[in-house]
Image (cartoon, rainbow, N blue to C red; front, top):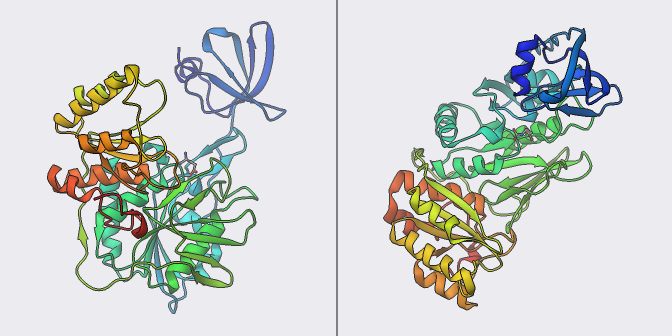
Length: 430
Ligand code: DGL
């Protein structure tokens, strides 16, 4: 039985203090949000999980209290400052730890950000909107489409730019999606998250938001970027290009880095220091291409692969596949059972699926011309993507197929549309 079901049956709620007997031992702790196993936080701070079947008895010692909501900020906006829109989508940046349970929940509403970061009001007038309250691992293509439609209104308003507060796990996918969706962006969209929730002393929520607002208030950058903590100290943030950034650490605050590219700018108390060229608005109406083809996947290449893994995409009628290859963009096709991989890729391409190749090295680029493997794959019709990140390639392929169809997607995948391929790295692609 699932722990959640067990809890409902026993009338146990998150936050209750319980005594559990399991396998002859006794444990006392606070019930945490539980799915498969019943989890409790012990007094010593450690969490323990129990298989429901192993619980001999459970007794509620004290009922938990519903935590009070924090007080709303009193907004005193300075009319002389530029307007910055903050669109909240979810994630740790707007979460807090419930210390009675130890769980992190995405429970803040957008204005609550101002309660924890009142400094924002000395940088800009701030308009907050609650778009969603999701963990970013739950984002899907529909989320990108609907978010883009909500952002469109702000892009056409008198706002100087938009901060999108977002969970960090898939922030770089959303940054890529928004980069492709909008053409002729008139102003900046910055995705901002935090690795530590705002009620922890080490939180990066405030510095990330403050620097994003600072940047938007002054910049003429007109594109999609990620603004996140960039050092081990609380001293500066980088604004990173939306199609060339990646989360490279699971927990450090300086988790996001530009890959095969330079940050756009360094932002701190000292102001903005631009570090590379960046897109500016040159006129023309805002265009939105907000559709995505659902049947697109990524397959990470590894030793000892089976051709059936590739045939899966044909059987399930996928329209696009990113092979995240080894080294310069390889998958074993020349020896033993690997020869079946070659046949499977050929069959997949013949079925109409677009197959592209990136490198799992993260840094560097693909090159199909160095080894026989690359040459054979290229001859089969695999499209090599240079230094485009796999995550960006995945989003781009789904976006091209969704808006422009197969032929256009084949033509445009190896060309840089939003800076996703470095200018100096495209030489082996076409
Ligand atoms: N799972 C995370 C997410 O929404 C929450 C943590 C975070 O924001 O980094 O991406």
